[in-house]
Figure 1 (cartoon, rainbow, N blue to C red):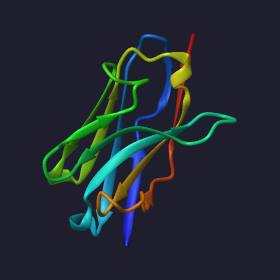
Figure 2: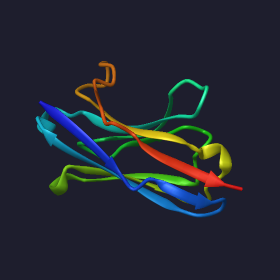
Figure 3: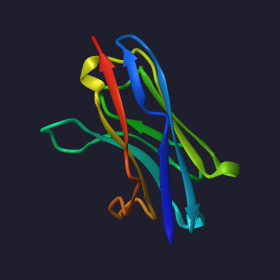
Figure 4: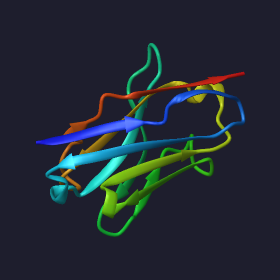
Length: 119
């Protein structure tokens, strides 16, 4: 059983910063990678960033490159998303996800945390 619990969302003004956390429990030793996705009202869920558990290789959506940073703490089984220079278009529910290999779909999901950026 795997559980992912996000925290750190909230309301922030444009240009501000937030740090999201995702604490994983259960069979975390089976993880290949963890990532962040987001879904804005009326839009489909989209990829934001990911990190490979073993070597910290990262990937980012073009829309967040240079502003967001994903990092992990293996000892705490936690992944973070540092979000700087937030824009109103970053407003969404942010979801943490995990998968067991590079060819598997994202199998495990958190419940989501709301991020709202005011202009």
